Amino acid sequence: METNEVFDKVKGLFVEDLGIDESKVTMEAKLEEDLEIDSLGIVEVVMAFEDEFDIEIDDEELADVSTVGEAVKLLHSKI
Amino acid sequence: MSKRRVVITGLGTINPLGNNVTSTWEKLTNGISGIDHITQFDTSSLPVTFAGEVKDFDANDYMGKQHARKLDRSAHLSIYAAEQALQDAGFDTKERLGPNVGIVFGTGIGGIGATEDAVRVYDSRGPSRINPLAITQLMPNSSTGQVAIKFGIEGPSLTITTACAASANAIGEAKKLIENGVVDVVITGGTESGTTPMTIAAFAQIRALSSKNDTPSEACSPFDMNRDGFVMAEGSTVLVMESEESAKARNAKIYGYVTGYGSTTDAHHITAPAEGGEGAVRAMKKSLDDASIKTSEIDYINAHGTSTPANDKNETLAIKTLFGKDAYNLTISSTKSMTGHLLGGAGAFESMVCLLSIINNKVAPTINLNTPDEECDLNYTPNNAVDLEINTAMSNSFGFGGHNAVLIFTRY
Image 1 (cartoon, one colour):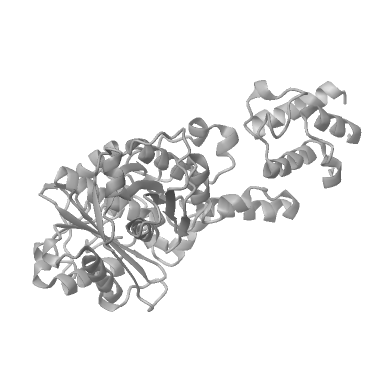
Image 2 (cartoon, each protein chain N blue to C red):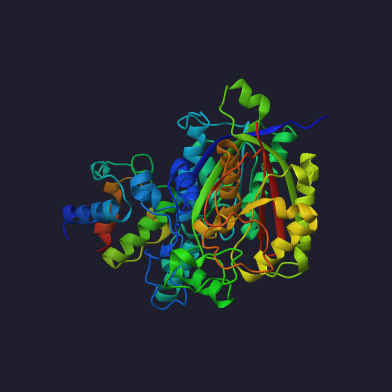
């Protein structure tokens, strides 16, 4: 799967499942500051990623993820 | 030091009759029921298929999907009612209310819908797929915390869970906070949204609910010979209460005083009232003492009047015990006949009714009261509203657990 396809799927999850405004979801967007995903929300996001891509994400792998682009990069490496 | 007097300066409500105070009062005084077949989920396997649901409310539209999906419906309703009440009281809801404002909120079963959802996911998909927001949705203090966050309420906060007496107790405790000078303003009231499959099934299992599935709007018939149980309902009602000095200083509109609060416990049975409503008698007496008034000064009682055989009989006995032969001159009504039972939100809703009765000099009726019961032989204002000068009104609330909370409201 190409990076842009991963991004499209991630964007779909954010918009459809989490109710985030579509225009806010860019590769540069910061999860906490820009998308208002707090510590509880991150757990939801990880669950949604795991279901969508049929993968498992460890807490340690999230340490370097603070933007949508970084999330897409992590997902891309695991698919 | 004498206690400070406490007034109500704002009201907000969302309930089966309407999504604001004006439309709710109009339905109440026209004897219109808000009870109907359940629309929110499939009821085909349930023994009871009707309830008092909130209508025409979409939390996603109101607060945005990203925020709405983090909260249980009971909290959606709380924030909606609280915003109305604060605006009604003349507060700027964009500003944080700060440390001189407290919150005391009541609920019977909190985010029970979120609990049911989480258990369903646990059973079907296992522990790793539980909603991470489940705890913050289901905890009974969720509405208290969410309303505080939304409006920046930084003073004391309490959540009271005395079942169907919860929001009456909340108002009573809020009154004390203001009387004693802890804060000048308290946002108080209650919420409930337990019209969910497991909860309805569980209440039906103990034969607490009316099972008149074919005639929902006629099912809740307090004090009627053919009453067969209460009707589940959802909603939230919020009151802004403050010290009289604070209200005057803000030049706020004043609905009335809350002058009396009595709180007692039956310590008898977890669901059944004590014989003759003994605990209720003591609670009513304590509220009169708190207000420093005599029984003869009560113009109207908004009864607990759930439409269960046991409540209505024992509440009637309790009123007769306290008021003696004057009980027959009292004007009483049960507005639950129209709303259904708002459980933890009932005391706040019915407190609002008392205040509106005083303001409008009008008593909302007990509808569906057609067949007299010799054990319920007082004046329950059957079927039609009446015009009556009301200076002092009493609101009764009694809850599973044996909790009794009585409030008195007085004309300003």
